[in-house]
Image (cartoon, rainbow, N blue to C red; front, top):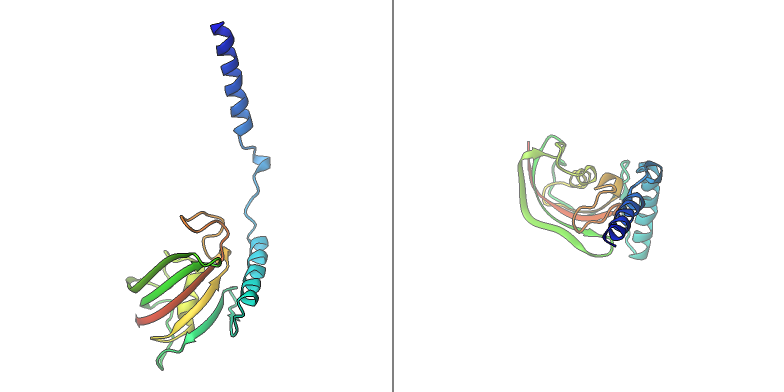
Length: 166
């Protein structure tokens, strides 16, 4: 009787192992071009559904709009250090991050550590200006799950450029 149960248990274990094993043929590789097209439509639908006017599309695919013009002067460059305040949301309204007066004293906008799409917004205004922008997932966290940010999420940011340093 004991051998019978052990045999069934072994068979069940093998069956589960085979059933749960991912086959390389079943994996779908990440297609950035296809995802960019999906994100583009998602952004256009979001803009239309929320009656957002004045959004412009950057050559990178990031949509942006100046909410408050800053002081007269130069815009931030990739080589500048900066101080910002920002809020980040998913398109469903879930806020995933925010901060006031964050100084990236040793980080420049062009350095690593920031998602590619985030770098676009601060360059669209001058000191004390506020920019809202929509980042396609391919310029955000792509198909990675980042805590409260699901894979392939378009991100919405509002950023105030408090100051920047050469």
